Length: 254
View 1 (cartoon, one colour):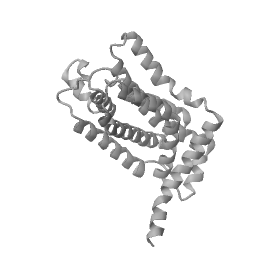
View 2 (cartoon, rainbow, N blue to C red):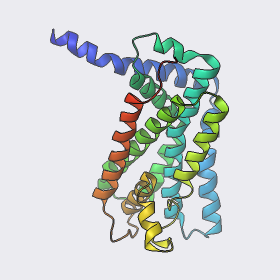
View 3 (cartoon, rainbow, N blue to C red):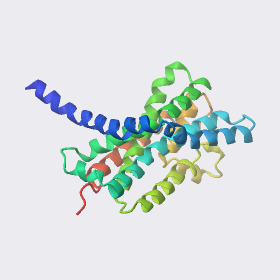
View 4 (cartoon, rainbow, N blue to C red):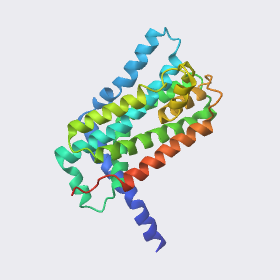
């Protein structure tokens, strides 16, 4: 009986891995250059900031590029799901199967992670190279997982309400700008003019992720911020969007 319970408990994991294999590994075997294309945005901005600042803000650029990559790979899940749903009608197959919405989301999120893994590995290694002690690596990995997971859940929730691929692309692009461009992720949050803007930026999870990476690299962080606050905000976003994906996402078309 215990073995059967363990087997049934592992079924969603096996289903998610199979979805990730079908939509990620098989695609990469046919199109390995996809790894290069998906890494262009964060590394190109990192290069520009390095040149413009003459290397002065390299640490902040690395932290911001890592955040931007995580947001991009997480939200890209929404575009993929919209494409599979509206163009290929693949989601109808999973709806008719025993696969749950969260398992479907997990599988496609893992496939997106496969596309971004080389770039994320390099950026995380740069964080370590630019001053992060080895003891801070678990904190680095935890922040990466938290941000990627919450962005994936957000992408899944948003895409479930998109009826057309064009709408999904526009909405995801807009959210990407709101989360990865407007907040202070490429520069110190203290550079914002006025306390009101700084406190407003604390509402956004990407701000806390970037400050966390800055903290790991030994950069000065705001006096009114702490890793506990950063983790609390990111966990709240993760729980909130997972609950939205579970209860409010449109899984079956009526």
